[in-house]
Length: 321
Image: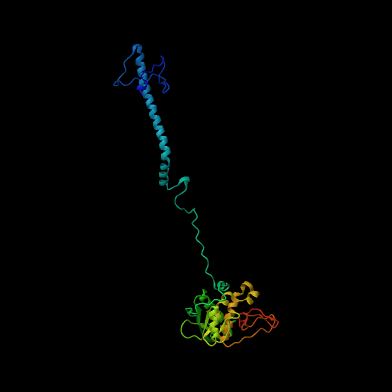
């Protein structure tokens, strides 16, 4: 800075560095132990030397101040985030004053609602897919577990077998058999009989859920043809009461036409009561009064109208209980 000013001559009486700094008064003399510039004639060179010296000092000071200010601004810009992050970390906060940790003011995540288990009635009210011409494996599995006879009448012990490969709920079928047979509107009416499901030993008969093809094979052993209307049978020459799985899964038009969406549950009860009724020694009968309930031993899968008489669907041997 001193070298750049060496040949500059300002008009007399003016400060050549006034653009950098203006002094209201003569700056104080430098300390005695510092070098002094040689004096000029009339004191002009000495005064100018002192002015240049102090003006240079002032310019350097201003430059230093500017450098500090600029550096501070840069540091403020570049370091503000870090400084803020440190302050937030110390205070446990986040930008905007929010907390980085969960508080009681923030709602907890909602728990996923779990569907309630499907009830027996809901399962029995549904139809299930099964082909009318299905012939499955021909092999059976016994539904495990026992259901004690609830009544005091003549006891019948039965087993429940389900053909493998049907894709139907065998436990639901077994539950339906036990509930239906021991209902007071069924063959257990007036404590005349009681029914007990077993899974071992020798039962009185085996209630079997089987595909249409396998049902036909077992019914044919007793001279019965179930293929024409795809029905069930009591194969009396064997120990099996055959329930056609297609009818169990899909029901019948006779019930659907009258009861609509509510038809499948009572239809399944009718299937059980009708075929077990044969095993107990009851034969087919037909409705004799128009508009009355059909007898449970009527072939309700095939018809509800006969001889100009129309009867109502009925799954029970003793519908009044």
